[in-house]
Length: 405
View 1 (cartoon, rainbow, N blue to C red):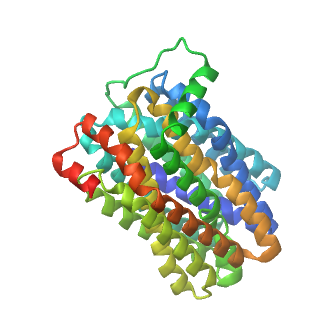
View 2 (view 1 turned 135 degrees about the vertical axis):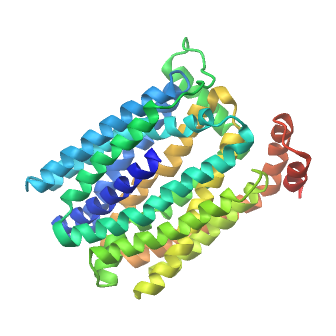
């Protein structure tokens, strides 16, 4: 419940920040640059955060990061509402939030296992988390669009800052048994090297992360360029931007419910390349649309496919990884899912200035399709390597049959 409230504020801030940047600068490049600064720390620092997540109590780390994120939102709201905001301040505060998220997100991913009592519930827990995230994605942008049009961006940042009170309060009320902690005698760089060797030395983890990286770099920038489509392609305003994001959120929520209905992790290895391919097709179709309702229709499929691909990858990784390396592997998941996005955002902003936003997204969608095809060709080999792990972890006979099929 605390996270549900906080995430509505988070989505309001995301919408307001993108609109604020584009309103102040009318520059696709600066829109991409601000997104780059907000996410590049995740790419650089999240592997180190993964080592920390395997050594210290994750709950305390998350409480600290949430308090810092609240401070960032409140500072941003004060600057905007007093008229002292500029693109330089936006860049600095985006970078600061990126550093916070670089430590918060990997630790949060590893913390999921500590909140559930049975590992069989892991897939449903991740799906529930995704459902909460995407339900907020429906509500937050819609509220933000109305507030921006009526009174400006500042109140969106203020509401986000206050919303962190709910999640911090919920975290402080938790009573959990800490997960397995790796030895503290190993140096930071040594633990980092061990994590990379483990993740990229095992083909299923390596290919899962590679496909996720391709989708994040080439496909996810459609979110960054959304204000361009809302204002310049569809000739709308903040409310149009909010509706587009809400459409993607509606699809993502449907994807979360689809995953929540599953009873086993087995079979997700087939779902992942199919949804990556569907996402690529939806992005391509969206890039050609100049009608708002048609664009929203395509974004529903894009949101569904992207959510299912990312959450399925998360579930599969958490199911096959060793407990004492969970934090480090999940930090690499975050690095590929979120940390790679700034590279795509910067490339998309630069490319959109040269060839336009529609062509940029079309090329990105084609790359996602190619990545899905490459993963599909390796699928049989990967399933053979995953099966012994499932047997060792006590997957039921029906699950083994599904995995073998």
